[in-house]
Length: 247
Image 1 (cartoon, rainbow, N blue to C red):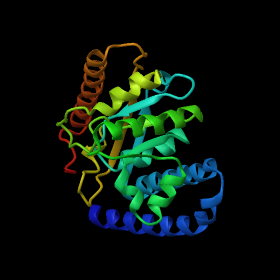
Image 2 (tube, rainbow, N blue to C red; image 1 turned 180 degrees about the vertical axis):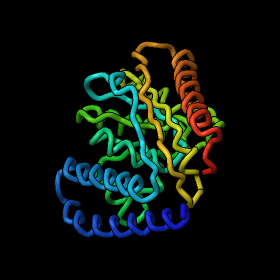
Image 3 (cartoon, one colour; image 1 turned 90 degrees about the vertical axis):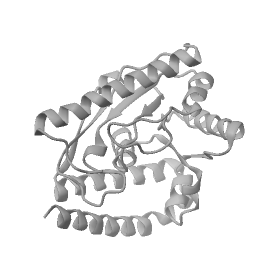
């Protein structure tokens, strides 16, 4: 039954996405904020389908930790769910994504017009300057920036070295960085077709104020995210007796 529910979910998302592409295509010449509103609506619809069809819902903790004004969100990245969640939860953030995604027909066109920030993961210093430039523009528009410091999805229980992009944003933009922990990978695995029923928890942690030295900032960011993520993962295991099999 779980497999059938997952298949139905994908079918419904395909139909929803097709309709959205057709309806919003004229907005390619509309102001950016209208494109972001459409993306946010699509993301909320996907999460509603996910909960209604597969039984996979979510809860959000720590909203009181989000400062006023645009900030930088540095999030653990375990699942595709994470990329759906932020536009649904935050409205009009600018997400740092792989530059190659801009080449995907329709999706890439919409993402670029919506002000997403393309990252060239092999571009070295030039890529960092491009990331900072795009993030600075978004902050100037009053939009928060979301970045996944590990640079890719990482399975529950594991972590990768945090990439220098988040350090560059912290130093150059002089905005608070809000660490984000999530346990989505326990329910929606990186390459898993089946979506396990349950409740994903996303937690906004206490912000890190500007002004720390680079190494101190990176150590503190990693400590907060990884500690909270392990706690969220352990909470699922304690509630159910065993973690869902989503990897």
